[in-house]
View (cartoon, rainbow, N blue to C red):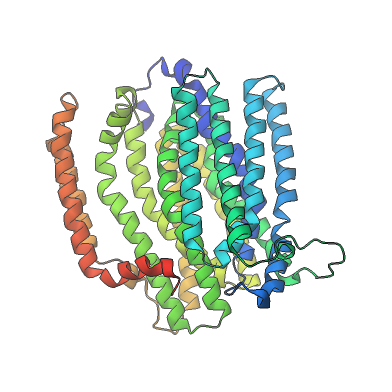
Amino acid sequence: MLTSFATPSSFNSKNAKRNLYAIRFHLFITVILFLSREGYRQACMRVDIRRYDALNGEDVAKLMKITWWILPRGITFTLFACMYIFWSEGLSFSHPNAKAYLIIGFSCILELLAEPLYILSQNLHLLELRLIVETAATILRCLTTYILIVKETGMEKGLVFAFSQVAYGVCLFFGYWSYFLLFRVFKISTLFPFRVGNQMDDDGQLSSMCDLFNYQSIWKFFLQEGEKIILMFFDTPYNQAVYGLIDKFGSLVVRLVFLPFEESSYTTFARCASEGIRIRKLGSCLTEALKLILLIGLVVVAFGPNYSYSLFRLLYNREWSDGEAPAALQCYCLYVVALAMNGTSEAFLRSVATKEQLEQSNKSLVVFSCIHLVLNVFLVQSAGAVGLIVANSLNMILRIGYSVIFIKNYFRGSASFSLCSCLPSGWRALLFSFVTTLISERIFLDRENFLPTFLIHFSIGLTCFCISSFVIYRNERALINKIIRLRDHSD
């Protein structure tokens, strides 16, 4: 049984609150943000806006008029989420956790205030803007957390988490709004198309598409966050804390690499499809996107599992490194490949599918959601946090299979796309690196004499990484150079 790893008896009393911060706060934020904006993001990013001057100001205004519906929707979800939390946990307004939830709700509203301009920037392919704003917001959130903890203010940890989220939301809000108000040529009336006497109608087709994607976002929420709900009801605080920590590590890769790339790919695919670009060009774009994202996933697989124990030993203590956490992180590293493949393949499906195909996709999400929740219930009880990651992997495989079938049917009769061509060159070097670092960990790494033996293990991994990087760059130089030039928006 995987749950037989060491779970110190002192853990539950000493670390019980970690469940609240790692699982419950995350779910609270996700419920509000995901259900408020995800459907609008997917629908509005299918709109093709390539120029931003007075000639297409009306098109931008119609887009903004739709996206502003995110705010009242978000406020509604925030109010209901707060009411439910207060009722289910029996909180009063004076309780520190109650204050934390209210502050987090305010931070969500700040993010949603920036959402219309985020969607507009994605449509305009302003990739550098997102990189700067979100990097600054992430750094500010980390600094806020660090200052509030290190200065020993005596503040409750829940409030520390809440104020760090506010710092993140404030940075997003001012980052996007400052850019568009100070440096763009859009008029205020274009960004706020609600003045009296404005008879401009909503885009009926876009509104209908938003409704369709909002419905889809409900099932995507259960697919992406269902395991955390199951974890809260069916597992121990130790496994909840383990999974929460692993999920935080994984979210660094997802948020900083996979999610921005998935959303950029989505807008690229949608633009190509709306412009009627030849299917060969669309196939080439999909091949390059899958090849790059698989390359990143394979790098994580090659080096992540064999350095999971070392990471926990360096960052935490033996309570964590000798428990279930390293095994869970090893499984998560393998799960990353499925996560990478699914994100880009589903982005292609959502960007080029017709309304009827999207409705069929929604039905499949309902089935996958039910299967996923059942797998979570069984696997969490038998394998703890590792079982949740296995359930997520199986869920991803099902979704990838559905997307692959759609893609094969889409390119049927055309030689412009092949799954085999998506495998990046240099995968053999990464396989060699995985085997080498696995052997190195087994032979050289000594848990009782950790630091000196880790330096040997690390040196071997660094050598393998340099060799793999050289081989990959030599074979995929054209693709890598093309990605570097993306900041010029020439492609």
